[in-house]
Length: 287
Length: 162
Image (cartoon, rainbow over the protein chains, first blue to last red):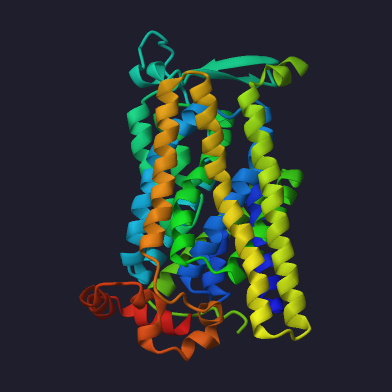
């Protein structure tokens, strides 16, 4: 146990998680590349540590959304069948897929996040024809309502195209297990484009689902001995503290200069991950 | 504003409390374990004691992983009591998949768990023999591993340099 290294891990996760929290995203997407590039941590160990921190952030941040009536828990548990199955598939791939491919995949996800960060999310426009029946959503009574403070009343919404949403959620679970991230990057299009949920509901429900999705893969990695406590413990604590601080500061997605900074960081990390995939090292962190 | 707060269903409240206090508890155990390990490292306690102390942090991490499982269990019980059998079946399926994950991990457990120090710091890894490297050793199929080493030029450099 190296105290200095533990403190470094704690500080990095705290910073990543706090900055992520300000823009309403998880810090896992920063933690894995930073640990792998600057901390010289094996990417598999970094992913194992990150997946634990993803659970911690999801569970730690769920309470306000639940109390606010924003989380659709019926929809969440339904979609979790797809995300956990995806995660289980990811666990099988994790052991077989070569490390360089993991770096490639991570770079691609980082770029996708940067692109999503630039394209501001707008409220999905559901087709106004309420008459059309949604077989699955009706059978499981997934439609719900949430309190909209701006209007001072509850807003009802319908859940659309569940099978398409489930397919995208399977992919999100797979990527989450493979890369140790919450993979909100893939959940957001699933919820916006397929299910047509209001943004507040989709953010809250996505956060609620992330923990269970990550538990499916983290359980496997933990039992297999892939989660190294000396790395995972400081990262988990740092992420929880960072997430709390980030939520307090709550700048949210409005600040465009912070948004630009984020995109720059994401693109830089993506470039470095690509270089790593080819075995080229420009940036050398502390030895 | 008050009516919206009162409107929230009891299950949501129960889940919020479970997750909130669960996170607090797991964080406290991890902090305790880390603190003990650091104290052990600073005052030059024997190696064995350090390892034992890290075990407390490991329990904390296990608690974090079990927390969502507990959450799904709470939902399962709630839906059974509400006689909502469709949602109960779905919750049971999710629970089964997660437990399957644990079983898969247990089945894939390597005989010797790699020492934590080996993969953590760069120097330790650089001295490791190629056959000890995790990336390759985790590939059970030696042919697949050989193919991966041959066709991914970055793989060897990464595992050596990381």
